[in-house]
Amino acid sequence: MSSGSMRGGHRNSLASLLVILLSGLSACLGLDRAAAGDGDFVVRDFRFKSGETLPELRLHYLTLGQPARDRQGRVANAVLILHGTGGSGRQFMAPQFAGVLFGPGALLDTARYDVILPDGIGHGRSSKPSDGLHARFPHYEYDDMVIAQYRLVTEHLGIRHLRLVMGTSMGGMHTWMWGEAYPDFMDALMPLACLPVPIAGRNRLWRRMIIEAIRGDPEWKDGEYASEPLAALRTALDLLLIAGSAPMQMQKSYPVRDSADQYLEMYTRARLHTLDANDLLYQVDASRDYDPSPRLEQIRAPLVHVNSADDFINPPELGIAEREIKRVNKGRFVLIPASDVPG
Image (cartoon, rainbow, N blue to C red; front, side, top):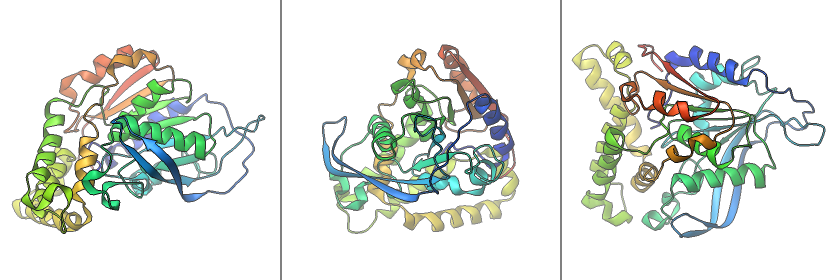
């Protein structure tokens, strides 16, 4: 469901851009523990922007690699990577990311970097509506998600500086917010598949369609359903498929009617029973107040903004990325050409 993510045909381009962004950053010494694997951090009495509170907010995360410490004993090689809407930190274990970034000799080789892959609020194995509160779960926003990520990194993992913050789609939007909220906390930023402006236009429309499909399904029952509102979820899946699609790649992969129809049936069958309507509604609605545009000048770390030309959600013809990157002091925008390579 991670709409707008960078596709497989862009792996080499992403790697090249990371080389540029990470070059010149200081080396790290003093590895002192093995990869931690899965972990959880429980925040007591977490207060959301809405004023709602949760007695226990669970934040799940995955770490790869080992922390390296500088002469003052501070972790000096931590990298934070943020997932897209409906995803989790584990999505980056897929070959198109892990196979390019995390292996021996790769740009984020986990023998050199301590990679942190959190599950955002409402996602993965972090606290979410389907845990039991259903539609009574606090109505979180991106601000809440970023604050929770910061607390995970600083309070639980004891990290006071990051080498890199990178994210795709929703995680890319969070990357912009990290750069503004904590401008001296990282050496570099790389937001992917997103824009640093409010969710509006077509981007807002497909999100609103999903929200209304769920709320308008009689089987939703104000979030207290005994079984999933399947009609709403089918509509949501259709919209998510279109929003996350790349036309050249899909035309090549499904060039005739029957292959396209078979793919849709397979896609729906594989995903329909993995969704929870409340979780999805909250995930899509969390972007409602996103808007980093007034504070772009506050970003101090070098930033490379990367979008792809075949992105349905952030189409290049809008010209927004080219316009807004001029306001980032050390910013650069790169548009990766459309590709028919499956991702």
